[in-house]
Structures are given as structure tokens and as C-alpha cells.
Image (cartoon, rainbow, N blue to C red; front, side, top):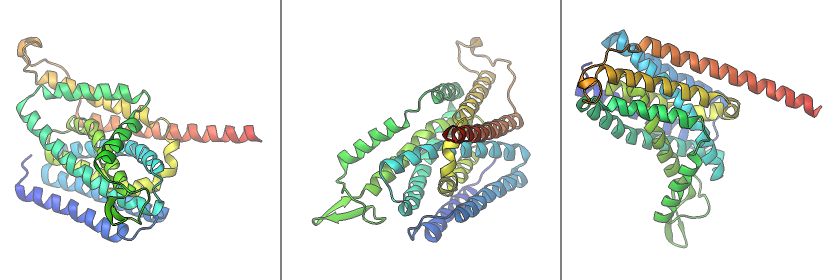
Length: 327
């Protein structure tokens, strides 16, 4: 896949332009978005992501388009898992609903910039060391196992909060949607800046899972970046759209853990196929079957559909039984 510098520049400019448009049109004036607004713009951004996939198909062929769609669906699913943590952070800091849009969007932009560094580092490592696929595969398998246990994200968030408070002078109260304010003539950070830092770095922690996962679906840095950008782009709208449904997605973590484990196995098989490590098969390639992009996309899509439907059905039955018990 030959990507020119001009293509990179245009793509980054379009992504930046969409974020600027989002800020100017929806975030600059503090308000709590309605379900209709969130639903409409979520659909728009998903449509843009799908349109980009068809552009990839037209420009570089169906194989790369399949890799992009598989990566986008995976990143979108993992971003929903992020929302659980965002809800906890917003509740912990008691962020007023009308100010949550701004901190979400700025945190997402900050996370995308930091993920860009991860993507570049991952691409450089893959180009130089084939054994990196072993490392990525192991990371995903361990992450899948850890996801089945009690999540430790709130603890990570607490450490980030304490670090930020040690190095920033912070006020006790919010001052509208300002990140800085003056208290007794002294310039201080507001709690909103703390929330921004926590959300940005918490999302960066998720990149340790999502970046290896998408490199298991495509080794093209351009597609990795695009899938991450478009998946994060509609995250703010998704937060307000399905915020009330998050507690009903009780089996989502199981589905995501299976997806990560599946991609981890795919990476290990690919690493064996490209093996150069001397202590494995004498440094020769190992003849093992590889998982195709089409199969990956099918497994990812089916897993998300099954876990979502099962979650909603289970939550509905549980709610119905709770109502009968009260009666």
C-alpha cells in the first residue's frame, strides 16, 4: 500500500477539520446534547467512516478495505468500553452535564495525538523486528484474561489524578467551562482541567490494548491511524447517546476479551509464519495456518452482535423479574 506524503497531509487535515467543526458547531457553547442531536451526529460520523472505507476500496482494493473495516469495528467496540470509565470519571468529579462535551472532545483529541506516536512507534518496530508480533499477541492474550477479572481502571485514574494535583495548583470549584481561573489573584487550574488530563491519559492506557489489536488486523500505519481517528471521532456523541444503556451491556467485556484473545492468537500465528527467532524452529518460518481478514471481520462482527443482543435480553429479563418481585 503506497501512501504519499500528500495523502497523509490531506487525511490529517480532514480529521483535524472535523474535530474543529465539532468544537465550533457543538461544543463551544456549553449545553447538554439531546438524544436526537447525539443520534444524528453519531450517524453522520459513522457514515463518514464507512465512506472512507469505500474510498480505500476504490483506491487500493478490497483487501485493504477489509482490513480497514475490521480495524474500525474493533476500535469502535473498544471505544465503547472506554465509555464505562468516562462515566465513572465524570461522576467522581461531579462534572456538570453541560460542560462534559468540551472535556470529552479535548480529551479525545489529546488521546489521538498520543496514539499517533504509538502508531508510528509500532510501525517502525514491525518494519524492523518480526518478533514484535509475538509481543503484541502476548499483550492481547494477557489483556483478554485481565478483562475477565475486576477492572482496575479506577485505580489507574486515581494515580493520574494524584500526579496531576501534585504538579498543578487547582481550585475547589468549577468556573463555567474554563480550564483555568483566578482565585485571590492567583492563576489556578479548575477541576475541569484535572478531568481533561485524567480522560486523556486514561484513553491512552486503552491504546496499549487497541494499537496491538489493530496491528493484528492490518500492518498499514495509514489504515491504523484512520481507523483510530474515525473510531474516536464519534465517541463524544456516543457517550451521550448510549450513556443510559451502558449498564445494560453486561456481557460486553466478555465479547471484547474474546475478540482481543482471537486477534492475539492471529498475531502469534502470523509471527510463527514469519518467524526469525533462533530458538523457535531453528529460526525458520513455521508452517501454520493464518487467519484471513474476512474471517477476522466475521468473527468480530458476530461476537459483538451476540454479546450485545444477549446483554440487552438479559438486562430486560432481570428488570422484568425485579419489577415482579417488588409487586
